Length: 228
Image (cartoon, rainbow, N blue to C red):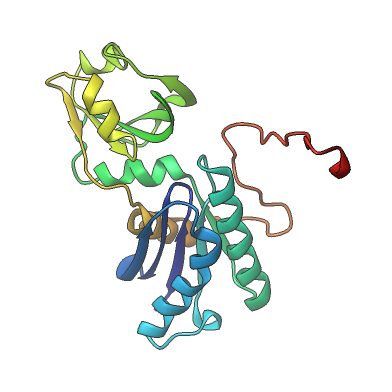
């Protein structure tokens, strides 16, 4: 029985889940920004303790590979890589938007679309558009939202919106073909996608794997001349 630990840190959510053969055994999550660095490892330890498991008895570790929060992704990926190195486990990287999109998996029918979104700032999101066969109709990009956003898709059929930007998007986007799926966590969906990747043998190279940061990380110059 193959067990995979999934780590979600690409938004304010800090969550871990344990799946066996693609089925959820248990999960723990915190919805509080800026706690990933302090809480992620204790969450992993607490979850494994519930099932009397050690990291060495896992078969793989899955982690969000972006897009998402720079700090959250960095913490999640470095933790996952460290555990994989220490216990000789394969690492599975899961696209954050694909994980959100998978929330609509049981709802999609031919002609339907799913639009996963990650909140950026103000009315900006990171998003892409997928069809019912999980093919990209529109690749990932930042998008400023208004009442006309996704109009070409909404006019032709059902569009399911998922992700942590749903609340603000629903305030500006009103259309009978727009369906909003609740939930800002995606760690269960990550685990199910990770099981598919595991069966394909789709693993990351531990030495070179880096998350997909949506924007270049800018290091500001120190204002204090003593720090220059």
